[in-house]
Picture 1 (tube, rainbow, N blue to C red):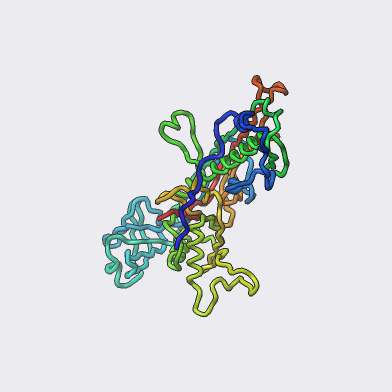
Picture 2 (tube, rainbow, N blue to C red):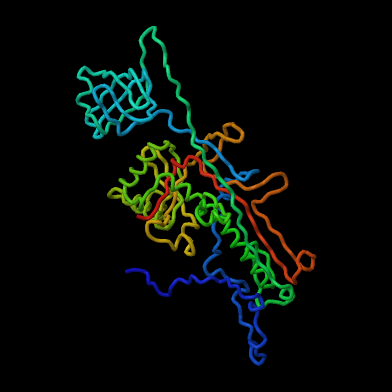
Length: 444
């Protein structure tokens, strides 16, 4: 059995570009010989599909910082030592362009299968080669000559010898976050403000009014908040004609995570979860992580955790009492030394956005470590602690462009037309630090 596809889900917008007088009953529609006023069960406008507002993710997480510049830039440190792959060997000479190995370091070398592993000490280097004396009496002979993997981690010197003769320069990778401007507006003619509407409306903040103008304004603000939220997730740096036209865009969260770890499909088995942990082991070893997911990804986690129950245990028994309903879902799990909590995120389930996407480009969720990172601010030259995910909003002194609103009204001399116009705007950027420690879950 399956849920019926009828009635179909309505995806038509409730908003139109129709002039606001059409939002009222026309006199020709009224018949005074009949009772035209319906008997309302509740004199409020019901949210047929809920509020349709997306969660204000950054605000709820307290991840907002002021920015007094057109761009935020920072540096992240690369690895301390090198793992060399694709190394070739002739006798004692190993070849790899631009390696960082030095004389005196102890070399560990093994073939691609891991069947043969040998160690030795590096005795000479050039920019493309390093010569190593094998520490095993049989020499390097059984190691093979191609597709070798090498690394160092310690060194050894004889008594009275000189020390390390080459210095390594710590390198950084530079990242930037640039804000973009999001705007929205609503305009009503002032005549409509003097006309009673035919229904009492309650705005999202609980206040009541009798004007359709209030509905328009509240709907406009909801669309603005959604647009502001979507910019954090879906923005991209523009190229091509749009860049030529003067629009730069900005790197949103999902675009940043495309540069990190990508997981294809759902995590639905223990093997899937172990593969995820294995990648995190190589990338940063941050043990506490939160996964924000759509319903499909949450189903995958629930089925995976349910399948781990042993015979004789009740499904969901871990947190259920005798007198409560059966809990068929979980909040997270611990595997090896890694903790994973998962929770739904409305923007990924929005039927008018990400929820409508399909195929390999569909985003099922993303994972962010619950940690802060120490990064170098290239503007100040100082190290700073930053949440791994946060947003910047343009602000300096009394000017704060995070959430701005202006009202232009003819009665107040701020509009040349007989209208009241409300405009919203925001200028924000999204920053993701340590994107190699994140996971973006996409459909298979």
